[in-house]
Length: 331
Image (cartoon, rainbow, N blue to C red; front, top):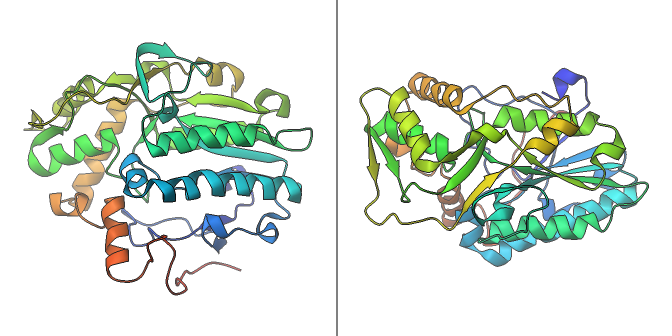
């Protein structure tokens, strides 16, 4: 999507999930294959902006080794911001999360609401916002995009995200399987609309986004988990809702107001809603012929894939490659 807007794009990725591509593959771009913790000043020189999404990307991964989560998600993100500032990179757009609000309850939450994270992942995002905001000055402008829970088809599709997961259970087993009691609130947003938010932020006047946080999504896309399950039951034929026997209330419960980004960034025009997204997922799973073994297995389950790479000796326990990874990248 950045390329379509005529931006010059360079990727930065450790390629831990290079074997986890879903569907027809990813767009090839020039790439720096390096762990985010190992970035040097020379890696960021000459760039106008950094769109930073690297990290351990969910709560189960974060809980696997909390110290590692803080090292990668917090310390490396702050280090990257400092290197960017020293190198004269003027824009730093950080992929934060509505997980910052954590145990937020039933009330509507805005960017001014208190943080209440309940997992190492959420805590790490809060710490980055707090530390990087202190670096803001006339030459370095950070912005924090607190994304709602992502959903939708993408080349590195994740099945640990609620709508993606519910549709996958329904398609492969005939059960819309809910692991909580279904009551928690969750804001959701399509991955393409997250991309639109990053691009709109990149294009916005500096004074509009300078050292600001924005909740990313739409107000109408806040759902209780059980309501998403009901929607999936309507879309996927011949399925029924089933609650896990040990499923209780989830501490992670937050209903998020996204009015600020919609008012401040007119370029940000979300195009997706949950029902259309669930239908898109169902069609993609049909096309691929997705099986339960695949989506619950080591290819698409992030934590299982990492444990496989450690077990076979490809990664060490710090999640670094033991030997150079073979990556095709254009010069």
